[in-house]
Image (tube, rainbow over all chains, first blue to last red; front, side, top):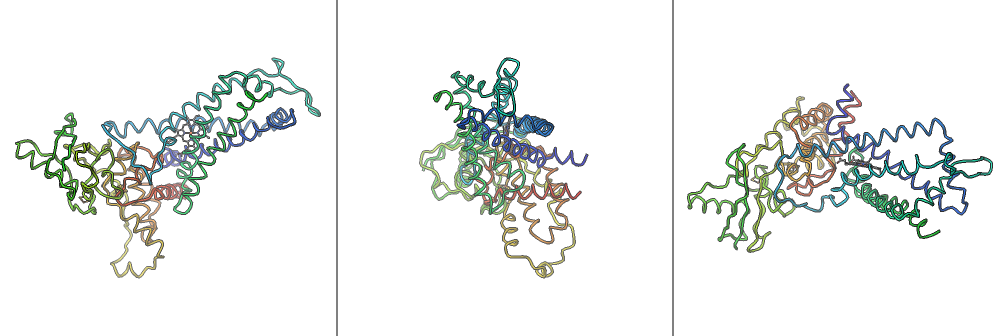
Length: 229
Length: 247
Ligand code: HEM
Ligand code: SF4
Ligand code: FES
């Protein structure tokens, strides 16, 4: 009960968005690196990687459930913070300007709610296209040496990213993800109380680098498929 | 210099308000912004109009009474400067400057540019103090305090409670003010005794008063006349979590 109250306090709400946000960042980085196996000279590398993930069994499902919880909590608390701001300032300013430095409120910070909601919509479409898209039953299979017949995700990916909507829509959303991370990564560390006089400048830069790396890492594969094959 | 002003006029807490246009022809670049408003008020009184109400006391940047949104920024465009110390040399001849009250649900407008900031007093009353016996000044000096801790406590103690951080925050959060008070006392041995109760009570009061949550926009630090750092907010969160975990 006491813990629940603490989590619903102004500090607790930030600890929730921050902790779930960091969980999502970890997932997004792992997912991005996993996708890069598509580029491997071994054409079976991607499908073998996907198969190995699935065969982790209960560990895989536990991570999936934790991730789903992270997404849900993150979205609910994040959106509620943005809803509360209207209550906290019912009459707005006729004229307001950002005061600039040393404030760090750029486009990324101010658009968290928009990039977040777009990511939520994207997540649903993305799961529908890939995770719950055509699989073994629809004939998307491939024979892997020493493993047998598995789902051919690589074929699904190659087909999807021939369509301009996917090939260009995905990179666009990935740039928004990069922006969400540009503010999100250091903001989460600030929410969790990691930032300090000594660390802040480094962590602030790290967030920017991570945002760019993740966006570029993700958007490379769709463009490579569209223009490359 | 000639200065055009668009000032928020509102008769009382529940009456509707609006921006009204005025021109001050005899402004000087050596005037403070509040002196400009004084000149405007003399003009209004001479014309038989109601003067514009605004708060001020020390007019030297130390009391925290003044506070206006000037040209869209809390305390105006000059960094680390309370509006009483803002001079007209920050503006150009012929400029039109919008002046609004600090806006937040927890800072209701009383009249014109005057808002009720007693929500801050209630956050302090929640536990922004040290209630253990600390003795008199010589006793305090008998307790050794590392130089860095003393300096940091002093930096946070510089907060004058003006409310600009709330006014500038897109969420209307009072995190910087509350964190400054907590971080100030947390540096000192006399403050550490009640550190956990203090942070919990003050954070909860912030919520009760209806201030918004912090999204780490850091607009607060940018407008703070005393340059209070948002690092204090991270330290407030550390202290809060420590308080929760230690029961
Ligand atoms: C499900 C879709 C998502 C929504 C609706 C969403 C929404 C939000 C919102 C509104 C905020 C700002 C919270 C605030 O104002 O305090 C935020 C912060 C954040 N988001 Fe997301 N987000 C989503 C997905 C993601 C993803 C995929 C990641 C991982 C890359 C992520 C990482 C973060 C981080 C690290 C923060 C900072 C947390 C903090 O300030 O404490 N979010 N999110
Ligand atoms: S933290 Fe700065 S802006 Fe906020 S009340 Fe204190 S002095 Fe004013
Ligand atoms: S009037 Fe005292 S700080 Fe401005």
